[in-house]
Length: 250
Length: 69
Image (tube, rainbow over all chains, first blue to last red; front, side, top):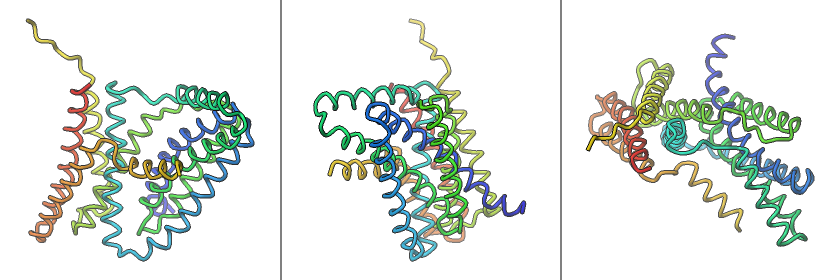
């Protein structure tokens, strides 16, 4: 039981945390649509987005089984590195105050204003436009969830635990959002992105190395070591970028 | 059509935000691949190039981004 948890835990937790971030972002748009035009177009758009995502997973799953494991490891590893380091870079810059933090309340206000402007211009098509905005939000944020689930599970038989983590996060966010009817601005999104960026980068190094023929010491345990290194470098970068700049005395 | 373009943009955006970061990661992977191919007995050296190369790329990229702003 403990071995099983240790085996599936990292994939499930990473999928849960990453999906939490994406679900919060999608919920903000869906709530904005619901506020301006009601739950019907918001719900229909979100449902259509989820349907397309499910079709993508069903279509991609069997295809991945046909790719040789070595090639799959390399391809997934490279994509995980690109994806994870992109998240980590942005989280470092946000933590250091170099770029502003992502603000769900601001996104909600901007989306609501845009929908109201569309309503002013073209009232007749608004339900369709509102549903489309909801559909796009769920589809686009959901694509990241799908990629993370596939990347964490491909070739390792982890599809069920990784999917369970992602579905749990989406249900949690949808449930809380439905109850509070407000964007979840208090979710520590940047901290989550930092943590997920660290973990995905570590997975990326591991899979890319395996794909190149590197036999990592300690096998799967090497991922923990890589994550610690990425965490140290990330935190050190934040501390370095946050330090007060010393101006040369003229 | 607009949705399709947005999806394609999002797909590319999943992996490429800052073009130079993505390019440098690919260069590091290529270097590790060359090392692993030329010296298969020293596969751990390729692993070290991959790991420390990526960490170095990340450090250099955030430092450059901070300088630019």
